Amino acid sequence: MKFRTETYKMESGERRCLLVDALGMPVFFPTLYITTRLRNAGKSVATAEQCLSGIKILLEFCGNENINLDERIRTGIFLNSCEIDAIRDSCQTRRQAAKIVNVRPLKRGYVPPIPKVKTATTYLYITHIANYLEWLCRYHLQDQRF
Image (tube, rainbow, N blue to C red; front, top):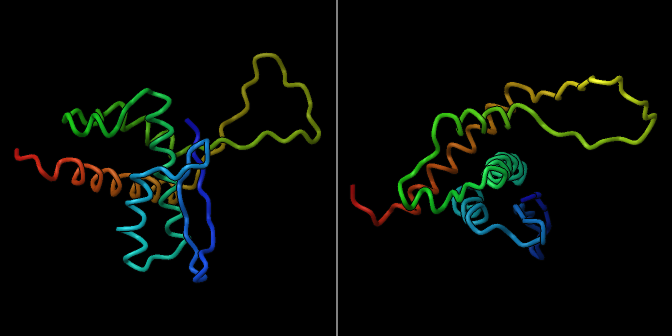
């Protein structure tokens, strides 16, 4: 499933950022997280956008791998090390929109290199994903006793 971030201005003049699905509907848990953890702490909309970019990577990975993150957390089946490594790899690369300007045919067998994200940006994505997952686990498991 595809997600995108949308920034808008409220009547009060405050800017907000949301993660929305392909239909344009806000995604519930990321919206709750951004509101309770970032907005209420006075963080900027740019911080929220960056955080949601990391969460977007996580949710798109889970969608591609058919992982129901909420259900797995509730049942205690957390992400395994291979899944975590794959999420890290997703944070390190980014897809660029294809440009149709000056298109030349590629040589047979040539695979263009995948653009890399700066190390600092990768670190921020992973940090936001880890913080979100910790919050999500606490949310889902708050009533369970271990």
